[in-house]
Structures are given as C-alpha cells and as structure tokens.
Amino acid sequence: MKRMYITIFAVISAVIIATIIIVTARLCAKNENTIDVKPITGVWWWDNRLDDSYLDFACKNGVTEIYYYASSFTDKLGDFIGKANDKNVCVYWLCGKYEWIEDPDTLYGKIDEYLEFQSENEHKFSGIHFDIEPHQHPDFDSERVRLITAFAELAISIKVKYPNISTAYDIPFWLHDEITINGVTKPAYAFIIDNATSVTIMSYRDSAEAVYECAREETEYAVAVGKTLNLGVETSENEDDIVTFYEEGAEYMNDQISELRKILPKNFGVAVHHIRTWRELST
Image (cartoon, rainbow, N blue to C red; front, side, top):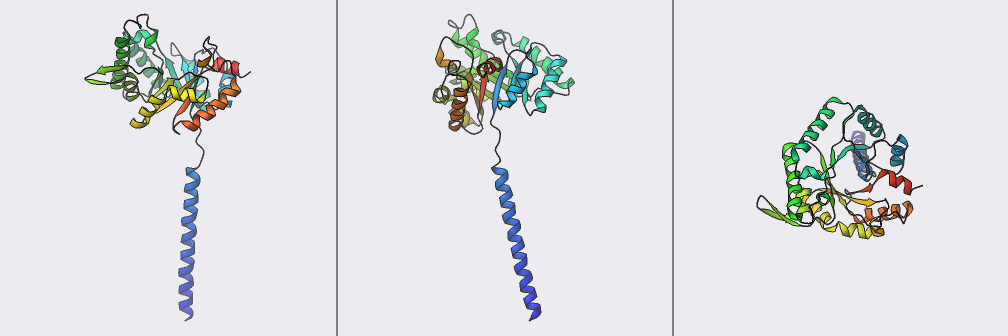
C-alpha cells in the first residue's frame, strides 16, 4: 500500500512538473512574440559633410536606416557606417541620376564600384537606395511613357544582373501609368515593386490620412505580392504647403507619423526627407 501511495505521488509530481514546464514555455514564447520590434524609420542623408551630431539626432528620433549619399567610395564611408551600426542603424548607399535611365552602363559601373567597396571594407552598406526620377528628365512631358518604361526596365535589369544586392527605389506616388514590358501590362509602380527589395513612396502630404491615401494603391499591391513599403514625408520648405510638414513643425509631424503607423501594415515603415531640414524643423 505504501509503495502504491509513493507511486501515485510520483506520478502526480511528474504531472505537476510537466505542467509547470509547459506553462513556462508558453509564457516565454508569448513574451518573445510580444517584444516590441522597433518600427522602420528611414531618413535621406544627402549632405555627407554633416557632423556626428546629426547621427545622434537621428538615433534620438528612432531612425533605423539611413540613405547616405556618396558620389565616390572613400574610407570616410566605412567610418560613418561603423558609427551608425554601433547605434543599431543600417546605412544604405543613396544614389541617383535620371540620366542612368538612358545610360544604364554608367550605372552598372557605379554598382561595380559599390561591390568593390563592399568586398574591401569591414563596415559595409546594407544595400543600395536608388533615387532615379524619370520626371526630372527634360523631355519627360513629351516622352513620359517611354521614360517611365525605361525606368522600369532598368529596375528589372539590375535585379537580373545583380540578384544578390538589396535594392530599394524612391518612386513618386503618381507612378500609375499603364506600361507594357515583355508582353505584360500593369501599372509602372508594380514593375518597380516586383523587382525591388523595398520601395519608398514619395507620398509627401501633411497629414497621416493624406500620406496614406497617396500610397493606398501601392500599399495594397505590395501586401498582395508580399513586399514592404516605406511611406515618405517631407520636412523642407515648399511653396505648396500640403506636401510638407515645414509649416506645421516637428511635434505635429511626429503625431501624424504615429497615426500613420496605426493605418499601415506592421512591417511597413516611414521615411523622412531629409536629415538636415528635419533637425532644423525640430529646433
């Protein structure tokens, strides 16, 4: 009888211990799943002469990725990337000329220089952020479809030629022109999204709702094809007030960005144009 009680006690004890282990594991899993992931906040960094105080400002304001312009590759780039990485900020090489649309070989040469830099430096870019804007071409009004199609074809060729490079593109919110490439017809933005790692929509408006509405169609398409977007906001002065937060100020912009994140899919981000005017707006 005593042995039976001992056996029953052992079984009960084992069940209790197993239950504790399972519950603890589930709690741990729940905690891991509920850890707040820092939302994507990008910023364009056009002036590489800015001092480290701008990097401190970026980090203070939650920036997770910097689009850093450079016309050539020097040791200074590696130093900046290292400083940013130490602050858990990714740095992407920012580049762009509308001329590349009709002169892709020159762009390929720049990408090859980028790859050489990547192979030789300890601190590396996280990818390339292209700001190639067909509407800057002097013949855009008369050759709109041709230039937009050439831009999309360029994105396709880069993906084919450099499949292992992370590529992002800035595109205007109005890039809805129906174009045909290789017998396929769809909006131009769809070709860019399909052939990029990520896309940033220049959805420059001065309220969360207006920013989202600018990029609604692109957002829905990106979700459907499993891609991510960043929605851009503007901070520099503009004669058209509705495209920038310059008049409203940084506090209002931050509130609107918070509201925008509530609307966007969780893996989408926000990008601010650009670091110098953002900081000026915040002082």
